Image 1 (spheres, helix red, strand yellow):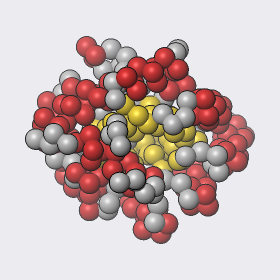
Image 2 (cartoon, one colour):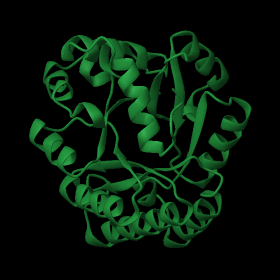
Image 3 (spheres, helix red, strand yellow):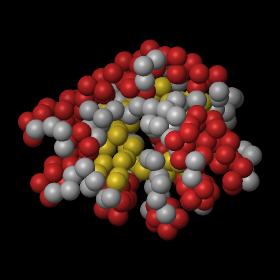
Image 4 (tube, helix red, strand yellow):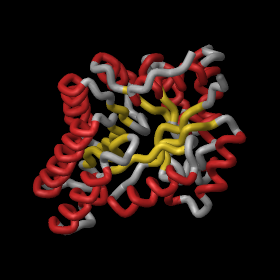
Length: 257
């Protein structure tokens, strides 16, 4: 069996050439690519990409907390209803979560909490793992994710983990997956944190097409370089095998031997 490196978080539909990006990723040994969505429109787009690009793309349906601050309550309700309808077709639910940088006032934070609760309920109903976003709401989001995991037996991934070693330990205690991204290639501090993440809960991502300083705009193939750097930092030459195994456990899918 060929072992490939997963990109655990990517905005594939936002790339100008998603099909070409997937071809590049597969050539670099990166697959599958977890294509997240930020609203119902993007969820429909990534589902179409998934259907065209199987088995190299997995599709997530979700309403991102930062989109909520741009929507009226009625628009939020429309997107949530559509995401709930798409949940059964999706491979996971995401990108969902809390973002107190964008929602600084309680009414907006309450709307984010409501959206998160409803999408976690959809994940529970359809037996889907979740792909989570947090910014300035880390402790609350971790508590919610841990409760979701304990109550449902489904797994949760906190993406773009650029926090502290202490918070990484808290996540490990709760059995929460963490994905490290290209920030480890440009920040010694982030590389140090990623090197300390619990091995059985570690994944890598690109968050494409986010820009990372001198690296420019990320593409899914960059996950191979992130994996290589992490393997060196952790003195683990078989890290790519561990990442594939971890992704399978997060998905709840038994891996062929």
